Length: 119
Image (cartoon, rainbow, N blue to C red; front, side, top):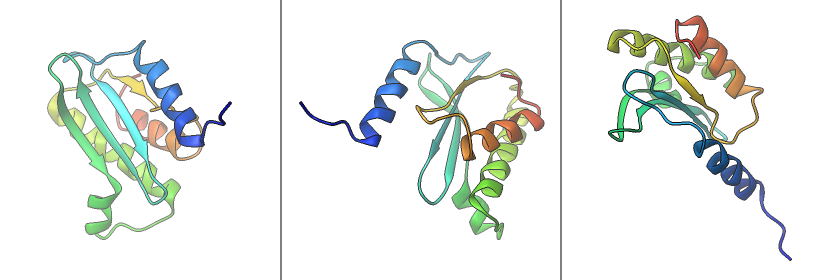
């Protein structure tokens, strides 16, 4: 009997969620991924396997934006929503990537909603 690590448990939750949701061109999947240092978001069309828009904390940091991880998550969500609007995307399916919906993931999602995305 082996004990599953935190990463294995998250990946198990992610596989379970991905079995139920899928993104299309009309309603792409808003995928969020986080690390110890930052957060990343993508709009993905699973039918064609293409990324329609993306935003991450690295590009914001290079642009001179600073702040806590929560503030970074909110800024990345807002930036991704702006990019989605320029692509003509309003409705998305949210994929939390197996992470619990609180903290940085929630800040990211709330900022994306404020930016005009509906999910």
